[in-house]
Length: 185
Image (cartoon, rainbow, N blue to C red; front, side, top):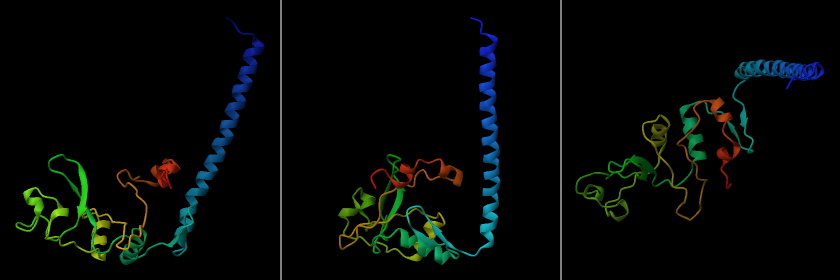
């Protein structure tokens, strides 16, 4: 089926208009990119200013390691007398977590050596959370968690998975909003 000269011309004009619109959008995006690239340079010249998040949280950018630990501990609060540590099962290869105990794997003290469970052990010596434990966690020396249900039955925090964190800010921007804040919050 052959098209008429007018039909071809109309289609050509339409496609040229689409192309012109794309070129305009491209130039607009390029201008915005240049503007955004210049913003971090201007932001570096200012001293620490409060960060403002879309959920209404404001905080000062931590400048020292102690500030970072303090910020982390204020955001991830839980029981102070015990914390969980991550492990990988030698039998199944599955990851899990259990309370940090000073007697873990100690012969004659730890039931895990004989196939028992931590909950049944009479020699429990839980390690309390301190700044050094948090510092080691932040440096990647070990993975810790927190038990958000406090002794007085007050619950702090919400559950989140850190297993697939974005590695760059551009990856963070591609995550749907419901995945960042949770579907049930």
